[in-house]
Length: 333
Image (cartoon, rainbow, N blue to C red; front, side, top):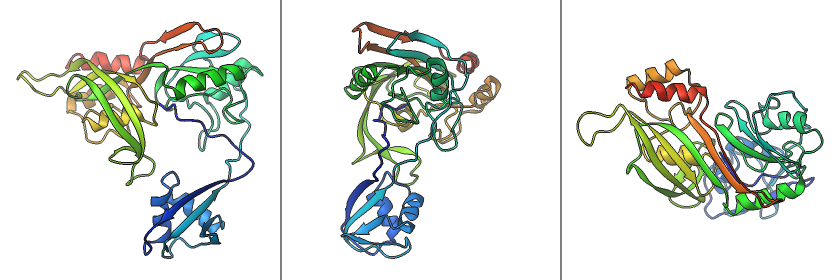
């Protein structure tokens, strides 16, 4: 899940700048630390392309030693690809001339990206809406104003008109949206009700992951309530094997709920990225028997004021069959 601003494509490269105060480290490694949004492999390719300079002088060769100075990286725009309409069934919750609300299934990406060029929500919307889809999001993601992770199910809204797109973007930027998610977790966060407020940014050990940071990153707030516990030991104060947790977002950082729950020692079941450690054997068996193949996270509630009509809208859907089956089996522990 993410309500981070969508990157728009321009004809000119985006020039990023950062100062390296101390030299001596391998250049590509030093640059990866200075430009946390770019992977080391990406920086090596940009170095080879002559897109990196220090104090105005081009540099190359990632294995060379970095020198102190102001580094500039000219990041070329992503080549947009025209997504094609695809006749993919959609579960519609609401639609008018300005926006459309759907219950996104797990396994569907919000928009095309590397390794996922077809079968996305954008492809389905292009078929369903035809030309009436906001173009503000760019060629590759028309209508998209926020995202859910590919393997997170639940309620999403997309813009059909530019005025709706602008209005929805403003609501998400101001966090003036009601968003509640249901998660099935290994163990349970403590206390049973609380607020997780941290900084979230790229992990220093794995650039593909997000992490709770002591400094840097972006402010992230999640309220949570443990709604049910499963496999609770007989002795008082024991830790349950699993739990159903409702999470309310007050910000929309990349992987926010997944990172926050994992930071409290209660990662989401089935999460291949943040689910470190193994659940108890009965929970593992329940996951296998339920056929869960993804993180057990569902965007259950989305509420907002219609950006054009001013009508208060609220949509709620139940978790899909895989999560319902898992919760049923967890209830037997």
